Figure 1: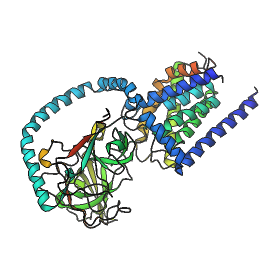
Figure 2: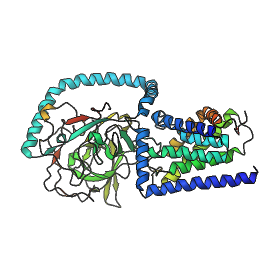
Figure 3: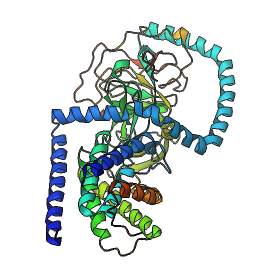
Figure 4: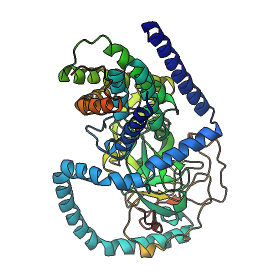
Length: 168
Length: 353
């Protein structure tokens, strides 16, 4: 990856954190807010493959981890890295990329990622299952991320210097 | 690059990333000092109430709330104006009642809740995680006198306790948290019990210890903090009202569901009471002069209005789960709730709040 691409990814990640904490965490639908750090991890895997997905997912999670006080530091980085990896591996089996298909891919990825987060959180003692309506949270995160999928893909493609896996 | 090389690089990268993440999780679990400092610093930068991020993004958040809640705000404004007019009429009577209560407290040597100073704070952006519905942040911190363990209330009742105080903000643990157990008192029958949250503000608070099967509990009875020795909270802060009674024959106990007094979805301003479980107790009448009541009834101001209730800090309560590290203060006086207080607005001297 060139230094220019690294710079662009840094900009994307920092912007995502600012948007997440400054805007999206206060925009709640049914008590749930979009999780664009998860979205960035999935889209990075989708656009740039499993390796990039794992690395970008790791950094996205690591940047948001300091403000998540009920889960251990590093847990989000771990889960989002695996989600980015999984998204990249899943993308390799996709032949065509329609807008609807990409949104559905993000929907499924967000659902799987959120569920994985809840499971790992429970394993680490964060009581994610005991203290929350799991189905509603997963559903709403997935739906809002699916709505934001296409702009997010365009942004990550810009960061990726047109080396996108997605055929338009 | 061949496919095999690509796979090797992928495995190597994923291994490194996973290893680093697990190392961080382990260090966090072991409370490694450096990591804690980094976390706190980053948290302050990212979510600090007085930081640039909040100022930069507030127009977007305000626009969103304006779109979604305009009708609701209009209705609420009309309701509040009506309520204000009613309150103004009542204020004279309340001032007189407060004065009489203060005189009574002085005579009976009880400690009023109003004797504790309090800090008024605003809720900043709620929890940053969808998976944590039992935390909120307020824009008052150490510089305002807030420390860990202080109760957080609003006009309706008990909200939670300060779990972590930073310089200009604090993290509040809500009473909806499953692990936050504390003792309460059922006002009408003066019966103690112990309970905890159910993990969500939509679910009732649960009293599942110390209430016998034959206890004369009925629906609608008021539940307040007990204030017994070593309690996590001072006495008589409203928690809620009994909404369900379930006998547990196996344990010979009655389980009570309590509808919470506070609407956790609409919290905007809160009061942090300058009281800690192991802190010094103010002398009766040492706090704000009750006769100068500002009409602020937060923190259990209205506990039924049927005279002073002395629940006290006398003998240690065997049911109270919060007693492991706190000694009994033999000189502690009893506590009752009242309407007046000495109030500090968070950030008043710093341009915040």
